[in-house]
Length: 435
Image 1 (cartoon, rainbow, N blue to C red):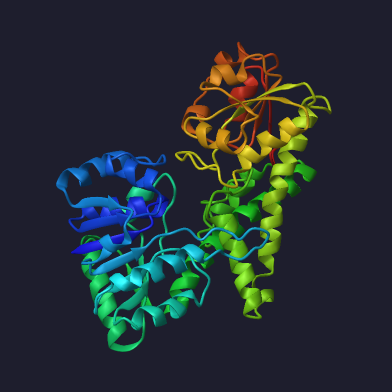
Image 2: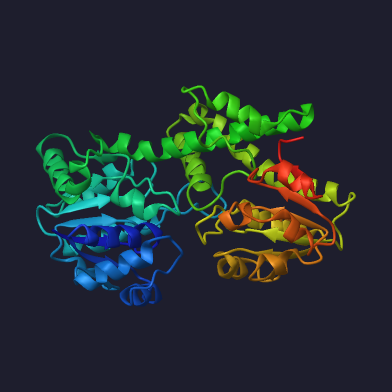
């Protein structure tokens, strides 16, 4: 099948490469010539495990090409819209200009019976509005939300845990579902669940899922606040309640909270859209979810001040990790980077390292000191902060690192380390929500 993928950022580049690997002929289209040049050379424009190898495999087959010309989408029978929906400046609402521009620019190149498939995360009501435009030229529209996790995007695309198709009613919707079944035939044959529903439900699935995950993370971080006041241990608390199969242990890891390009902006856009619909009270709890998440960053800075004798001015602080999560180079709304910047603004001598995120962090905050290795970051440090739980940081040997620092003080912002091991090596260990 010939497919086009409009937008070759994180979502689109992965989707295009995966679809070509599955045997489809794919053209990826983006307005950024530098991104297209890199992809055309088989180079991933961002860090995602497994993507470089997948690009090389797909390019070698000749089934994957990239272009800056939307006219190259002509001839494809399915067109995936994979552009971003960032938060509007100064507002909670999602900025839909890229989605709207993609569909509008695609219209002249559509043929009757073509299927436009939205994968971008959009406010409910967007698909119905765009479907009317697409139907004017004889094509149809489906909404097929993505559920990718950064660091696992290739796996999540090739072997997803479910497909959701939002389609029009009647025969048009059935035809759209049949086309998507053809696109995803391999995963469906392997037993991936498939839910066919209306546009509104499909749009709500993604934001509802992200809101639930954000709520679960903020819940355990709210418990961490209580644990700090009572002397309880939030990690043991999470273990205990996580054994309840109705709750589960995943996403109950207290720490700095969530960040990145999805969860924060998605829950805010959800609140904004609910307000427009007059249903703002239904998601009013998300304001506190967002607030708890922000308080974790403030608390980490306070804790750094506390372990440094009440002031961080002039103190040398080694920061391990600035990406919002491991296995990513993404620093958008990163709690780790936010804490590092706040420490520097309050007078600390902050030295930062990260396996993949330094270039992006430097682009946003060039005044921080960035180094390539853990050893450089912690040398002569008065305290060390683990802010992103990369495996190489979880596996550090406390005795070896202890030979480099000025004071053996570590703050575990992700509850990723074994406090007993570090304390036995002579370190003062502190973490959010733990005694």
